[in-house]
Length: 229
Image (cartoon, rainbow, N blue to C red; front, side, top):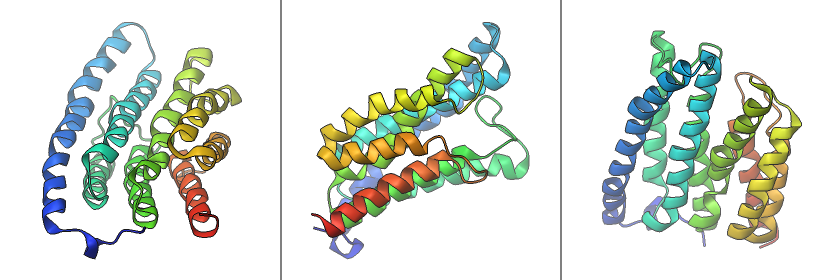
């Protein structure tokens, strides 16, 4: 069963807007307060600024994108409000780049991949939710770019001490995400996460792995839904 905006009672959308607000405030606290303090702690411990920034990005991926994605199927009745809030966060992270006033504890001049993350997160959930009507399957791309992409970076930084696209990160992602994909969506979930774990290695600025992973998982599930379900 697919989902359209016309099928949604306005009360459900308004209620979801209220449900999204505490999560939005939680993300703001995580990004603007907690990770800023973590950055100071990591610098004090002797980590290089670029490494601390990278760790903070992955923490934000997991604790914002990952945690919220897990909560979506339980809390929300439609995908439009989560997508709208994700786009607000995309704008909020884009403007510092535009104004050259970066949040230095998690942003870098080299790229604006955190903006891509917000857009890919919200769009992939909405597309799959509309297509399948299944909120649980719909969060798979978001989980892939949240937990999956985060574990690749954390493992690589622990092993090498700098940002790299070594295969050890892809193996770690596969070990985490293939079982999770299978648990949420069966064989198609496992297949999608397998492909996403390999695609994560590809990065062509300004198109990064957030977009490629979310797109690949969304496409695989969409094709499965259209032709095999």
